[in-house]
Image (cartoon, rainbow over all chains, first blue to last red; front, side, top):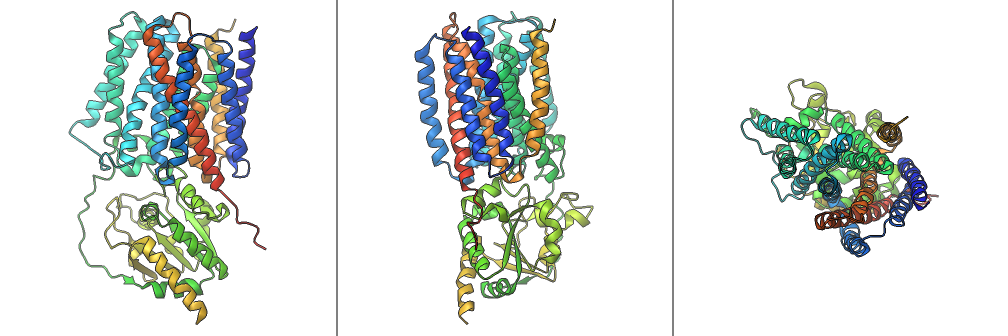
Length: 457
Length: 98
């Protein structure tokens, strides 16, 4: 009787999870989506607990510790650190799945298909666990952001993976070979580390999304191992979400999965630095303020450099000030502007910039020719016209914001040094481009000081 | 007769297609909150951990592994839902410009 109640509760909770994701399609309904997800989770947990009475003290203690850790993480984590938190929670989720799989193995030593699911669950779980920790270390800059490479790296990785997979297959056929299981677990853990080491900081948005997908799939495999359909549904939702996001990120960088995972981008091109001095124009904050004041429409192109300089709130003030003057200000956001999918939107929303002013690349690119001033702050490669014109450029083919089509371009930048990928940006040498040298936050503050002075004059 | 495995595969297939369709419609504006939400939802593995820890014949090893698993999953659930809501609260339209 109670068992069948549990099953109906699970069905309800599965439906709530789907609704929860569906409501995420618009900022208007998104918070309702969170509530639906919370109710679904609450139902799932209570539905499970009414049916299982043993070891309550263990369960309650674990719930208590988990909540005590989770609440401060949620409220104290600065928005710039959200990618790290996300990586950490992929690690936690994957660890949970892997440990449940391990416990299940030692308890029942299952056979047949259940064992297949269990092997997949633990393999994905353990490799996502260490992989996510590595990704987190890179994002937090505890670990070097540069890709770490060595000779025969891909060969070593492949060999290791083949070994882990081989042992996994052996365990599927002969589950009683218990001595193999720890080896299998360790190999999966090591493979997770080696998988992420050669991937550079710039590729982290893709990697995070991919790890998201793995974590979901391992929960899904757990569902098969325990014959629990709610786990299968929730895992599949998470898996498909991660998959879609990583495809979007790959497209935004014009890379393939294999290229991200095995390409070691960012260390390959020390580029035969063509040291011809090219001419560029620079301008002061006063001149910049005058141009902005005279403009009818201004597009701001933010990149991660903006967040590094902590300039979000100054940008908001600039936005307010220009809007009051009747200037139409829009933000043009490249999909990889932040450190994870959609990150830049969150950072700007935190600074209280209204979300209906944030435009996606495809929606705004056609409008650049009508834009008076394009103000680039902390973005580089995503504005480089070489991606469109120069077949020899390493970023050729990457979708970019058509900043070069604006009537005037202004770029706030510390110096003429090339960006992360070490590629020179032709945008900076165009006739209509003004370079504004300085720290993003300080320079915007200076422009802000100049603006009211002009209004008074 | 359809076995549990086959039913499971049907569920997986349908849930994946539903997931792909639903997620494709999510605005890129909300991709970061989306990821933390799916994170919280995939912490449903807490159910598996509860099943392991509360079985009558749970060994000490299972208890400890299950204990860590529940702690990790609950951390994800709590921080995932709360931080998603915290982020979504920040997304505001321009307040009625008249």
